[in-house]
Length: 458
Ligand SMILES: [Zn+2]
Ligand SMILES: [Zn+2]
Image (cartoon, rainbow, N blue to C red; front, side, top):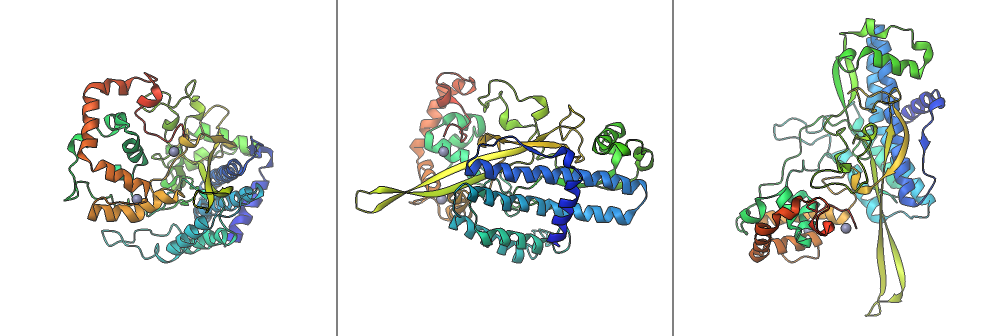
């Protein structure tokens, strides 16, 4: 079935050659090219989902429900196969640039494919209902097969903004990297801006003061966890999602011969299934905001037509570089080189409108470009940051039960620091006279006073 879907891709895409996606950068290094390639497939897939929405409108106007079902089914499949092709292509791009597969990354993927194949179909939520119902019959098996296919060739570029279905919902300080950075760097402003009660209120173990880690959110899972598109399905009438004239402009732009067909007159008010942008993900691009306490150091605001988050691709490459000089005890020293890069599809509708101006997905993406890694979407579960993922999955449950303890894990070490009452007191005292500094954008030594505690500047 995967093959059929890929064929559909190729066939439809070739009809669209006059608008071929333009990859801006010819840089390349391994991280950049892997991110660009992955993102290019996100753009291609989004355009295809949009084209299929147009075809669906035609099917609705003819009252052809069988065709509507087929189109919906293809859309459900390409929400996985499109990003998976991007995932495969990203590995090839990294390898073409001289990076070898990373055995840890490959092992994570093999484990994950096994979980998708065996655990997802049987996982049950608190209410006894299946936690991850399949978007179409056989989806988890298809998806696991594609993950295994990538793992079989070895993973060189780890996807670093994965949204695993089993990730916690976030909304807990222990799941925020910024919290640990704030403890390690005594970034008291982070507490002032993000967690004002935490320093004075926290009480040492035992019992565990923290609220339990949040549950897995009950969502309709229909997007690839890796390089997903952030889409939802909505059953409603076309004209409730997009104004008929704007829709017809897009259609005419795709195929001028269809400009005269009167889709609106035959579809208005008729309920059908449409693939739409998930408004909780396709927000304004707040990570690039130049105002607020966590302002991004840009010279000016992001142009309105680029001001959207949504689908993007962040990759992580970790390669070992051996040094010739032995260490002090005569053992060879190896350094791990970490490279992150991110890219994102960009485009417009009807020349000037944002791609997500309407909640329905329409073919709009014209290019992909690299973006700052800190402006990319991130993963509450740690993506392919193995230390972080291990901390969340293995160390935190143990910490909640047994309290902090000596560890080689950097995050666990911050929890030991946090447990010192004198440490927290230092923050409370500093903030009692200096909190005004936390609201001065670019204020005294702005690097040090910025309350963000972000990854920026590393
Ligand atoms: Zn840890
Ligand atoms: Zn860092």
